[in-house]
Image 1 (cartoon, rainbow over the protein chains, first blue to last red):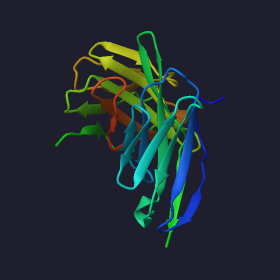
Image 2: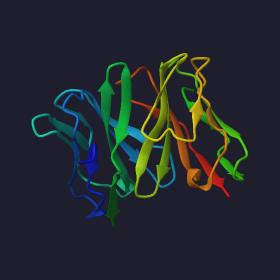
Image 3: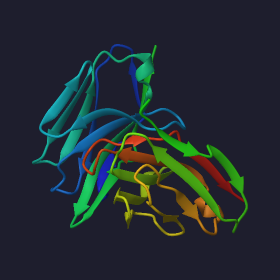
Image 4: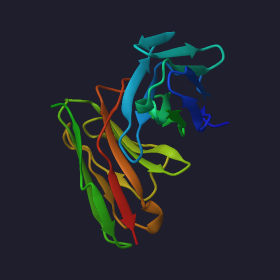
Length: 112
Length: 112
């Protein structure tokens, strides 16, 4: 099983729709999680950090389910400008080590 | 302006010719990291550093070297580049491990 897994999509949704992505992780000791947005060939930009059960920022909501080891990202009232790839990140930490593991991303296309 | 800078942004080189990609951050961050991004494989961590003089391997360290002599700089060295190192490279930094990372603009490397 991959350490961090995402559905690659693409998710094609009309403007104004609500869309949700899931991301599963394998390391049950992970404490902090992140969602990034990446536009084609550009650097990833932080969308949301998730340290406890969830986080909300405007139209975006992230939820963490530790029992089932997944985090979700919900986008309400989708805009054309939300079209991008969404990357989920979970840590892999050990004694004196700390790595960030990225999922391969979920592509979202918002259609007019 | 708080930022992570990388140079060069684009580089075409030949097999075996040593090269260095520089990375610098002005946020006094402790944790710095290098990633490569390839189609279908997502972002994979090459090396990371949790502080000055402390570096460790990520998931794909073969063929790369790094150093962290100063807090702000974290250069990536390819001693003998090969075509399979053709990729998009990102440098990132965070306050410390476990916190959100901020990414540089990326370096597109082609090795012929």
